[in-house]
Image (cartoon, rainbow, N blue to C red; front, side):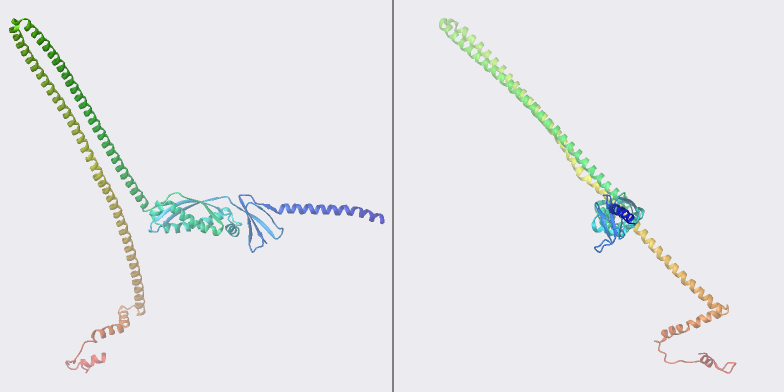
Length: 473
């Protein structure tokens, strides 16, 4: 027995060690399996007994140890969800129905407070259920935003429209733990064509402005071209005039120099001849007569020369005046052409300043008249529909009253044994107090001094007609 006990003791110690190691191994495995890491695209929601008076503990981008038995966990997916929202027949501030097709991108928020709302309201819901919930919220808020804005604001100021949508929708989505990522308005359409009319009006204004700008640019180009042509002609005319003046001056100078040289030569020649004649006269007195004759010839020659020189100078002066007159004529012609170009430029300027604005104003008046006529037609159509609806309601009410009266009369006739005369008597008896009251009201202010009764005697029954009348009362 002692041997067996010793053997059991020998096996007991290793077995205890094995159990201890196994327990530690299992404990480590449990710890590892209950330690949960949260990926970046999910939210780890720990629920159960989490402490701090909270219903759940939300962790994003971390890890947590899940206590066995008293705690459990689930994940919320952060993948964005795209929801198509086609709002149809939404009333704007002006009571005009519009269609607003749009697409919203949403996702579960990672902000601490909003993430707690998501854990409380979205945990356990599928992706489709979350989308349906968000879609209902978006529909309501989108209608509210459209109803608070005019058509002009919705169509022209898209940034304000998107800002109002984002502000209104996001505040409601946060209550269920969602956040708005993006809003994309596809198009805005109204059944009445009001937005299309606004677009046509803006296009007309843009076209008129472009036409005006083109006309102004063409006018500036024509004016600039005319100014350039005018400057060119003036400069060319001035250069021609200067050239002709210079040519005339050169010719005049040349003629003056030639005449001066000829005069000097003549004077020198005359002086030489004079000296020669003096010496000759001194040498030979007999040559006086010949000298006198030569002097007369020389004088005549000099006179002829002076006459020819004067004639040449006269022709040169006349030619200079003719050339100057031609230069002035060309200058006047160039100035006349410039004045004509300037007149055409002024005419184009007046056309652009008067006719083009008048055409723009005419188009504006036509567009305003069409818009006012369309507004009057729609207003008249609305008033006609209201009158028709009112008359239909009155007719329906009158029909119901007459129907009930007919049913009542039918019942009265049946109660009188299908005798129409008895039924009439019953109706008269029913209305008799009211008739008596009306008659009394009619004669209450009439003053009767006396009543005179004329009696024609007794009737066959022995009573007078007065007695019968009183007994009938």
